[in-house]
Length: 178
Image: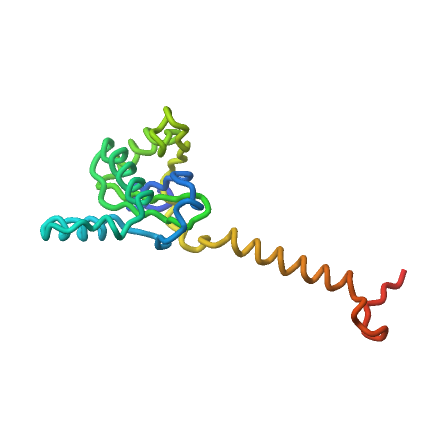
């Protein structure tokens, strides 16, 4: 970039993207497309102050993932915000850190690390940790798998319609000239 600046600028260097942090299929049912632990933290603090249990709002898998990511990332330094994109096909979690140095430590420590299911002892998932590029919108590709399946189904139906036209009268049938 200009003057040797890295994509995303100084703010981008504080944001880390963790891909393959969870299985999107397991996370999809009954959860929002993205969650922000900052909002959950406030709700949990309010619930604790009133003596209520707020964990009923979050599925256990989501709450456990948030706790594990926060624990692992906090070991590197101060975490400002964690966003879990529960329906993203790549199992994306985005973590915003207080400083670029802490974010850099997280990329080094977590890239290739195992998350979930008790880590290395129970077949966890290898995480790919990178800095956010400053432009990728992880909400944009949420239903890519479903859309691809629907498109394939439409194409298959059209192919079948072209191939099996016995129900049509002779003048409406597709004629192939060789």
